[in-house]
Amino acid sequence: MIRAFMLSLLVCGPALADRQSFPPVDEADRDPTLVAFRESLLASVAARDTETVIAAACPDIYLSHGGSGGPGEFLEYLAPENSSPEDQSREAYWSDLETTLSQPGYFDDEGEFWMPHQWQITLPASLDPYVAYFVTGEDVTLRQAAEPGSPALSLISYEIVIVPNYRDGADYQPVMLTDGTRGFMHGDFLWPMTGHRAAFVKSDAGEWQLCTFVSGD
Picture 1 (cartoon, rainbow, N blue to C red):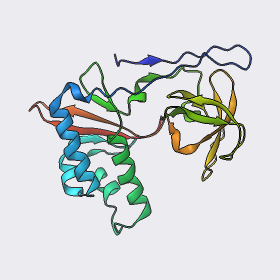
Picture 2: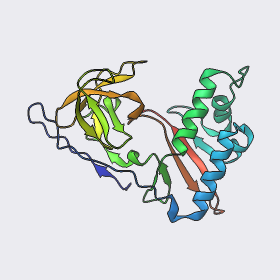
Picture 3: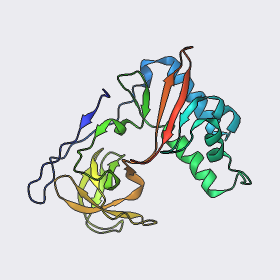
Picture 4: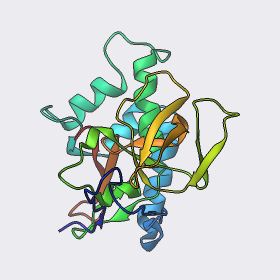
């Protein structure tokens, strides 16, 4: 069973639940070989070194729900046919990979290392995961209106919030805290709970590999 923090939702009028904070703790330091692997892989990702990144992946790396997986699919994402290094969708994929691998992570009960750390939060079945977001910063301002000078309602640190109507391209998103408080928060601090996550797994030969990089429910 995966170690998990439980977010419990209580149905009682406008309040959904008591507010809970999940400060990030990176467990990677428990294994120096993992730290070295991640640093090396991140350097290869930063250099956009497709060959080295694919070589660091599991033979059956999981990349999409319903996809074939493996190095062939990974190559399609990292270097799509007829694309250039300036291709926006290609660069977005590399950027998402780099950001995800840089996040604090945790070991599950099987010894796999998962990133980001908030992936261990168990959402209640009654909550649509596609409207759940994690606040990635400390003392992030919840504002009364969708503009930087609007009055502050609260400071939010590492909480699950609900964004029922995410506005593509908007700097500020309408959010609801789990206690029912509503306001607006800058999108830079909101990580979708269906967003990218990644897992490192140690092979039978004792070598770390990237075995999952996927998004979605």
